[in-house]
Amino acid sequence: MKKFDQYVSHLRILSRAFDEDLTNDFIVSGIIDKYYIQFELGWKVLKELLRYEGANQAATGSPREIIKTAYAYYDFIDESVWLGMLRDRNDTTHIYNEEAARQLVNKVLDSYIHEFQVLEMKIKERYSDEVLSSIN
Image (cartoon, rainbow, N blue to C red; front, side, top):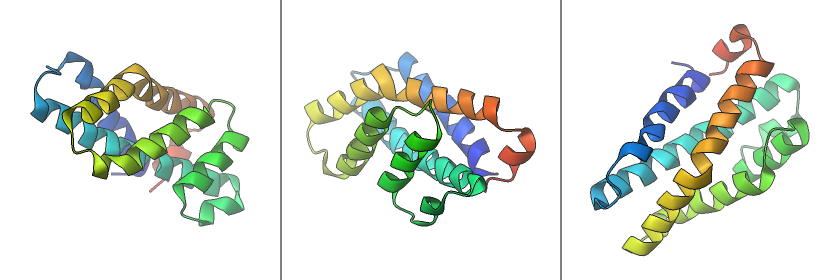
């Protein structure tokens, strides 16, 4: 399965978080894990698209550099949200208490899922199926 297909597939799963019991610690943990994977797929899809566009920065491999470059290339990227997602992704390994976990889940539900959905929609609008199927 190609990266963009994986991105879309995982986003469908993460989007189901709205229907889950957020008082269940196991569910909260699962949402955080799915968020982590979704973010990884997101910046890697952006990296491949920037490579397709000929952006030299796509060779760096740094999520921060990819996000900053994507912001310059695409008017639909909210740089501050994506950099916040990067910070939160980095902090997921340091979440040891219930309150911090719930705060992250609230961010995922309040803005991050929407931002992932915007990325999916805008990429589909901008690129043909042929381009998207070649992103691996």
